[in-house]
Length: 120
View 1 (cartoon, rainbow, N blue to C red):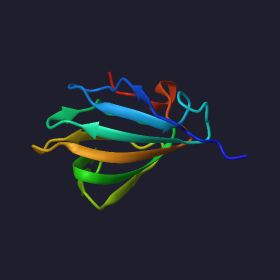
View 2 (view 1 turned 45 degrees about the vertical axis):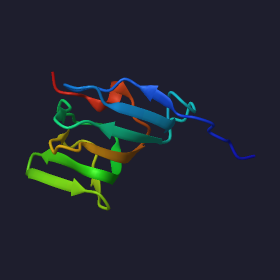
View 3 (view 1 turned 180 degrees about the vertical axis):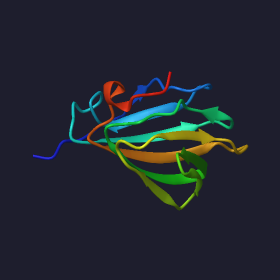
View 4 (view 1 turned 90 degrees about the vertical axis):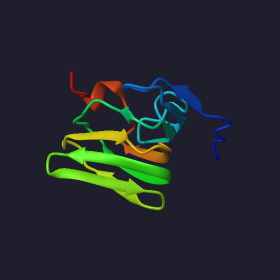
């Protein structure tokens, strides 16, 4: 039988400014460990600590621009574009433009604070 997700759970975000994370599917909202699906709303000037996660992350930008810094440089992912970041590779996300960004993130396996390995 299908499982209806009636509403997301809001999760506290890491970073220098408040960011809204609404987890629809994942360890918190649906008790799903296989993957997570979340809607992110990041304000202008938000920066998250760098991380070396144990999961792949598939991100689709709906509005604004998400900057993804990696060991080889920087990628700006704009509305209508997507990016895949791979487990075991260092990345840092930010939203430097005035409008911030809104995006959907899918993590495989599901996001976990224990497996994101943020920089100190």
